[in-house]
Each structure stands twice: as C-alpha cells, then as structure tokens.
Amino acid sequence: MLARTKRARAFRHWVLDVLEQLGEPQLPALPDKTADTAFENELKRAINQRAHSLSIRRFDATREELGRAVEKYANGKTQDEILSVIRSTESPTAATTSSAAVTSGA
Image 1: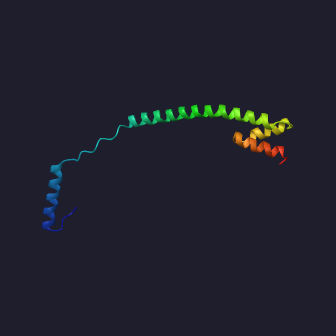
Image 2: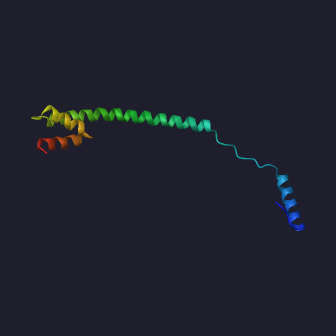
C-alpha cells in the first residue's frame, strides 16, 4: 500500500504499528476430527443395527402374512399363478388384492 501524501503515510505507519503491537491473532482451536469421526462411525453402526433388527422382525411378519394369503387364495390356482402373485407383490395386502385379481381372471 503506497501513501501519496504525508498525512496518508503517517496514517499507514500508525495502522501498521497498531497491528504489529496486537501481534498475530490467535485462531480458535479446530474441533477434534477424530472424535467427530468416531461418533459418526458409531452412529452409522447403531442405525445399521437397528435397521437390520427391524427388517428381520418385518421379514418374519411379512412371510407369515404371505403364507396366510396363499392359503386363502390358492384354491383352484395353478402353481404358476400362485408363484406369479407372490413374486410380483410388494406387501401381503397387495398379494391379497393381486390374488383376487387372479381369481376374477383379470
């Protein structure tokens, strides 16, 4: 920074002196990334374990519901029709609806 006048030059020297007296500013300490990463890893592990646990419970219930749907709607159907309904359904409730459609010949 160049000063064009004596007054500007004096001001520049004063500002630089003040800044020099203040010294280098202390930067705030950075957060401990290791702790954050450890927590994130533990959080992911906990979420995965819970999701797995819930999916196993839901799997058992869904399997039972599909079995009941097959027992209810399989009478008079071919094996291919029954398997087609089971393979194409998203949920046991949908299997019941799909089975009804197969029953009606849709």
